[in-house]
Length: 414
Ligand SMILES: *Cc1c(COP(=O)(O)O)cnc(C)c1O
Image 1 (tube, rainbow, N blue to C red):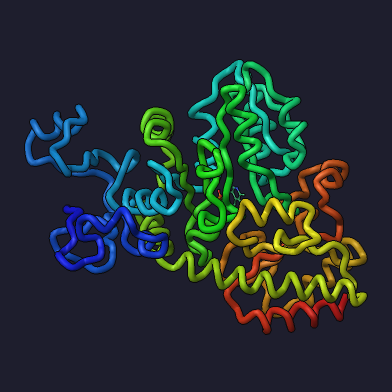
Image 2: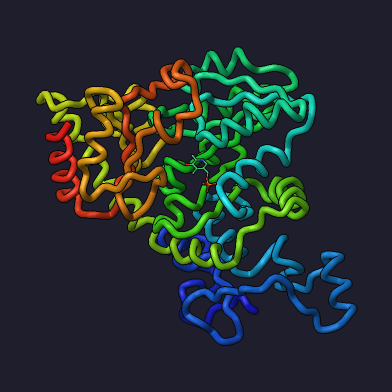
């Protein structure tokens, strides 16, 4: 295997450091085999053979020749997975990345690899359901105390801090109500107390929000969402400093086993090439639809709040404009008539499919209070602003005009 591209290739020596994001997403991390294949190879192998016993010993000791990569076993590393990790680290502006089998495996590993009994965690209350399970249910079982706060209220973060606070955790924009949290301000609060900030950056995507540059220490993704973006594979990734990934994440993941399959890594790697094209086009659609829904609400259509960080009516619109390059492809809105109204709307849609996934090329819609957030009490849902009529739309790659017509047709049936 060699990392050297043929002469004239865009990754010829010296140019790499100046590559812009789109170029990195096509070329970064590529390891060409002796065959010089154009497309990245899928190394569907669990193990690796060594030329002799001495070489095996050296590999296990971590003694590598210059340019040699120390693959030993696919639970710790695989060339296709490494290509995906390098490409995503380059996109994120992170020193290193570690891929996992799912987004939840990434969140779990990113938190648990650095926590121990006696530590304290502060997390925003508006979290993806399974993330909430980890902090609210799992952490206390291991003697890790957790305080949940309203993420948009910085005073609550400040008030929750203690000498033993080791980690802060948030998601912005949040699911499903698209609350935007000031990442730089929360990072600063954490750092004053010697705590690290972990950001679940799924909704913003690595293109539109750079938590590390804003002050966060660790970024996690469900690669299942926009990174695959075509509804095929589960995957996750943790991005951070070389030291954090090698000394804390790697031993944890290596010995507990949530490794990303090389097949899934290959799908994700190839998907990264088109990530900017997809996410920008989806966001164009989301902007059109959010403005349209907002206008329809003011004309008296059966709509309540229209929530989109790009609309001036969004409670953190200015923060979103400062912190995010673009507002993203998720839109939430309330249908009049509560659950019955929302169900009539969902059932009348022809193009937009009912599904709880997001970031897909296909437009998908979900009714959080009866699906993703049904486990919560009515009071907890109310606290999070999840009304009975709220729906969450993930805008896909269809023509926005067709989506607009689909939504208008369904609104007429509410
Ligand atoms: C989907 C999602 C996850 C979990 O990812 P999986 O790949 O489904 O395990 C975590 N956080 C957020 C914000 C998500 O949307």
